[in-house]
Image (cartoon, rainbow, N blue to C red; front, side):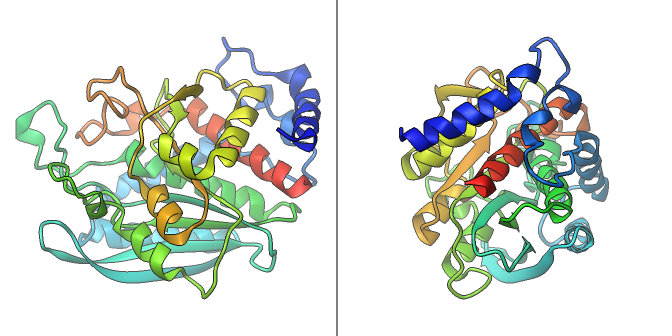
Length: 333
């Protein structure tokens, strides 16, 4: 650890030491906001707004490729990023899923402050899984997942961050990519390349020639109550420095209960393809809970009960708060 890194951490700690969140509190923004006040003109991350963005996605119904809900949500996502001041591109691609069916996917890309050379990539997937194959009721396993947490939560945090950063004076560029066709993979097979079709396509082609980012952060299942985000192992392998930075800032902000210092599993998520194909060091903030009913992800993963009843505003606010502080520090260096 360099002396410069230690100095930055000390400065950040000194900034927040007087207002570190009480673990017994509900995590409201007023209890942990001052850490971002050194960012000139930075509005606050509104967890209520992020929650409403999840509700809006859920209201379309399951966003399964090839459905009307999928098409309507894609248009709404594009318009929302435009409304927040981003320059938006929709990267359409044809993909064959493991069943042999072909779908047109849409990666939705919003560039905030596109003329800034120093750029950070933030991403999530926005599609819904077409089957609830982990539902405890066998009669429901052919039903699509409403995907409030597994997809919509990460998208919602990024939409709120887009609003915040577009209004700020922070001298850093942020690229938000909402990947499609992440969740149409073969759960019974051994081929990880049946998952993350949108991120695979983007990693091979990019949305503009020669695109690079300093690093990336993927959000996946970041809205549940009592969420647990251990250090995912592909993140540790390919982007260990960035992983430690994010988790250290989370702990300085008082979110120790969410951002566990324990190692989690290695997950073939969208970040895996960004790391191995695009060569951009990218971490995954993902709910991994070995004590859950499925022994891996949050308890309602890939079930018909991944709905709004399990979304927690405090978790959304914490993740947004951490990302704002990470980017503020990046801009200050």
